[in-house]
Length: 321
Image (cartoon, rainbow, N blue to C red):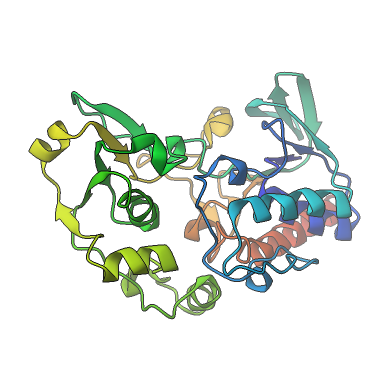
């Protein structure tokens, strides 16, 4: 059972199909594409199409620089059809529990029994929102779509990562923007793109964090070099003066459905052996970030961890039989 029909779920499906295993993908969304249909309008990848592909089939070329989110969605829809992925949607998984030798997956359309679960629900559906009492409207990255919605208003964008930088850069031609970060923004070298990030993350145990936090995609680079994108230290008074605050403060793994298995430790973390949960070896977490595999939250990076996950499942089922 694969829970989640986005890029990680599709990568798992590819290798499950190759392994000849019986499986189904349950997706809570009514349409294909995972989180990609829900991003802001100007969102683009960090890499060209051929360096942004899932296993088995390259993403079709995109003629105008880095592919748009819409191009990614079209690719994921076609990928799902190409490999005849058995997706059932919309099916919302409420919980996963142990039932003897099987796992019981409870959904809004009934219960399923399975030997292994690959959880590939990502993080988009669990945004982290600081709790602050402010006079203005408060949004999160997940709520942002188009800068014209904020034309002429005072907007505070909070967050020193890629989302904060890209949204602030998107807004500066249209609104009075204050970009707030806890520390000075750390740009990666301008020549670094998603392919290079994946290569670095795959080679270095510490990942790419020590190199910087922000990929200088063209709109960010242009706004930065023109002096329009300037970071300001956190300031509660400035937050209170803003008409709108956009929290680009990240996400948490969407793992509420695994709560009955009690996999989290006292610090709220899930102990992992590769992509397998130590507390339940029939549960595998795919695509949530570096802790589930190098660059596993990216299109190009999820393939190797999906392959390793399915190989482990195949070995476990072979040993059992």
